[in-house]
Length: 148
Image 1 (tube, rainbow, N blue to C red):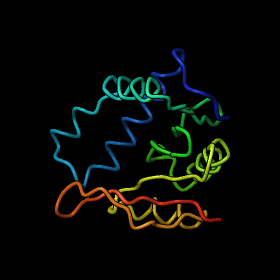
Image 2: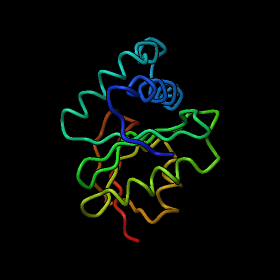
Image 3: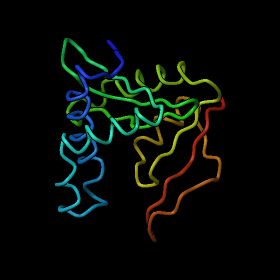
């Protein structure tokens, strides 16, 4: 079940975000930087995204939160699935849900180091546009857009 995040479930969404974010960034960030990304910090981040107009959704399976995604206009963001729950179709389910909610052509940004996510996005019809944000000598965010 996918439900919108609000005051009653933002803590659950923040826990999913924190655990998933720390795991996905473990190989590219310092241990100190990883450690500060607690559920409390991620809850403030999610609140700030909501204040900027993003709708955040929480996916639960049998009552257990397993993933989140945000949508603002036609931009899909913060697509995270708990590490222990990956490979079960939750990412696909969240992305398809988000694509239906987009107001225009779905667009997203992905780290160039996140090959697993890029494979999912490509499999569902996204392609790189050539736009990127350079974050460091080896790390950048790549824009991908849905092309069907």
